[in-house]
Length: 214
Image 1 (cartoon, rainbow, N blue to C red):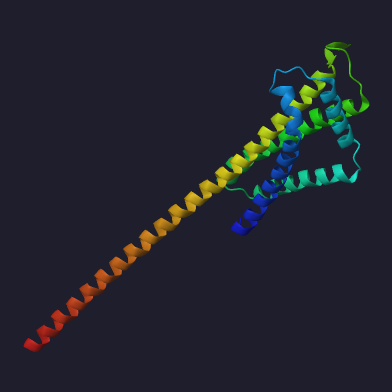
Image 2 (image 1 turned 90 degrees about the vertical axis):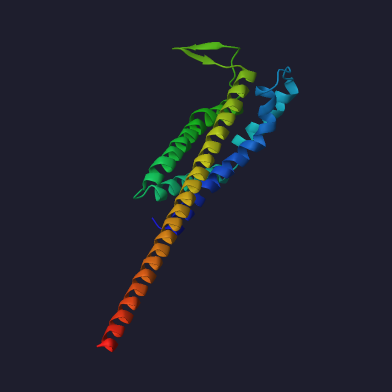
């Protein structure tokens, strides 16, 4: 694949990934008290967070459509880079695609489902059993699961960026080594050419002197 097309495909991957990280970062002030502090959660905090998530879930249809379009743009970038792949594409882009699909799975199974539960207010008691091994989480536990899903999704997206940066560094290093090898071959060719030229010149001078003596 040409370098220009590969750079464009990388942009299609990195752009949506950074977009998702921005959304998750905006939710981090809400998620932090649920996961990283031992302070008791006040009711006013859970009410504020539920209101915020309910507002997100009830946003106009254009908002989730834009989000899904951005997800599709990232997948398009992977398909462009993995079309007729090189060894570097198979290693870095293949692993990045696996992480990206893990993120999409987390979004569908945990985040979307959690937003629906929070919007409907269908919380159970603490550890209420529904039968068949399922359990309905309480209000705070449900918010903690959603916050943990956001954190895992953020780590997955960071992993995609790290792999793309690693691919760029590996290809840059390979290009530098190829240029250095090509430069050495050219210098060696010049030295060989100058050596053969001087040898032929000495031979012609010797033959000329021999003719004069005759």
